[in-house]
Image 1 (cartoon, helix red, strand yellow):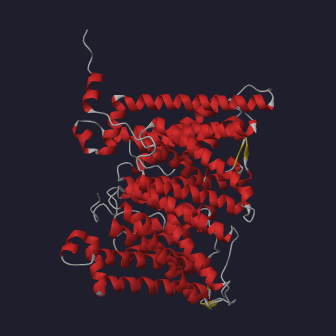
Image 2: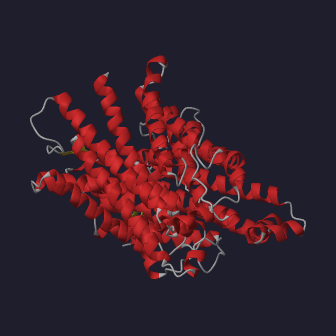
Length: 286
Length: 309
């Protein structure tokens, strides 16, 4: 039982930063960016490159992956999404799926299809009250929690965070009030990109890294963000825990092979139980 | 070379039918279906299981595929159509992924990743290899032609006009007393059934299907066909599907010149080209090569008024 809670937290910790990023982009620009999984994959490979061939410690690799993903995400917005602002949500969705597909194949082109893993020292698990926790799990969960708290604090406490929320709420009003909307948006995108890079690094610690990661993480990330209400980082994190728990229960009581379908099942359930949509009453959709 | 050309044309015919079905859903009605491969795969396996496990003839397999595709389409649509377009996209994508998990894991039914072998062919048995492949091509092109004619007719009817109105602004047809939900549901179900039927044709053409035949790259190629051709224009889809298949198959030949790349890299490079082309198309020419014809209201009105004398 306690083991299941720990497994839940571990998988939630991987998904949560990316779900926060998805939520952030959704609140800022009102579209579902399906390329999040692609950027998580890019982050995982960036971290691997810094960690294994370049031989740097993992925390350097993680920071590096965050920088790489923040830049790549900002670049994708500059080149692709900015020009399409104002187009229908469907168009942006299609473009983001195509982008995800391109990113995945760029990774496959550079790194091949073989699975890769970080260069981690072998450490034994810690045993507390008959529960085995690996040191990696402890690290993954604490780093993820810390990152979400930091993003939450930035959004609530700092002037740039307040500006970001103002822009998300009503960009024209924010602009009239003298906020530099484009730079605030770039800041939001960079934060989202960094969170995607962090998710990529955490995925690499827990699982192996290969280009097929893309679709394996996309559905849980989006499911977590939707369940979390697409409003706040804390909601996205709560959504990630819920999805993680549902996955653990599936593995324990149904079939482990169907873990990948859980995210979809949860989305379907939300649609049946709350057809007005968890976002329907929160965000004014156009 | 001859047999290669036949193979390319057969594949082009299959993509064309899928793209026409998607053009009905997305181009005419504005429904975003990212689960094309889900319905396609469902039809392939349904038909394979009907003909091999239950020894039904090919036509029964095709019928089974159409029915199961329609049921699956109705379920997915009932779940998500009442909501905004983004939800349909998410649900259909999840549907396709889940269906593939089922194909992979239910070995007793689908033989899993090792592949499901289909002996039944859509043509008379006992012909030579070449004659059979030409006949299969004929069957698929005939199916493509039938679907094309059906779609062009549908797009021209008052029914098609309502679908377009639903796509543009569903408030207007709703005000005119049209049941928007039923129109969307019918368009989605018909499209899904056609996709599943295409799966049946594909299964009996390749004769061995694995879950890997029904993955995202196929969906991207189908979407690309619709977007390149021009969403809403059925003739455009023919052009789009041909262009996409020839670009995709054509890039196969860049391999020998790039000797420093291995097969994996060449395949990745082809998908990068396709994906970038799709993004550029949406960015710079969203209406496609053959844009949907603008129908002047007066012209449309005179056609439905009975002429005197």
